[in-house]
Length: 205
Image (cartoon, helix red, strand yellow):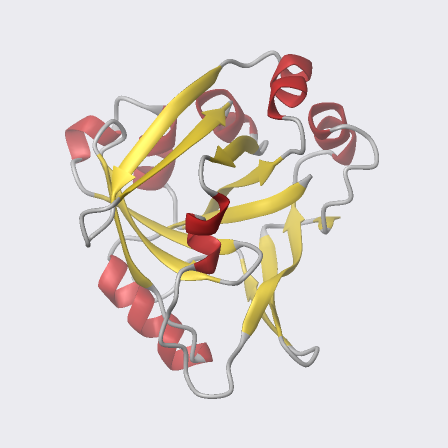
């Protein structure tokens, strides 16, 4: 099992991306819209995972789903996704159904995936499951104009307040994810061993 991405709710995508760039040199690129959730996103590709900045695009539609409400009401980390080696086994253990998802990139190409548990997990402070149809197009690998010398390689660690026993029950003991127990916070690992650490709140909003 691997950490796929973190979901960071922001009020303004452009302002949040600009603040991140100024603070760290990391660049966000336009993502796309999620019509079913009334949201839109920008992506910070980190090599082995990514940071998803999400803002409300359609307030009325956003209120109709747990994901949209979490973004509308949130200010910072509101959830995270994991990709299990065996999605079918993971969803059966969690008792959640898989659903199909897709969004159009700014260049007109489509991304598609299988997802499970977002509506159930996010209100409970649990991760949801995700598997990309085409691993090569995973947003974690999207090219981005990071500042010279800034080379992200993934998420170093994620601090999350949910009871570790509840996480183990959902993910399976020995899941191997870089999770710590505590207030929402995370660190982005850089090539060379350095890292940028953040508390769980958003920025530039």
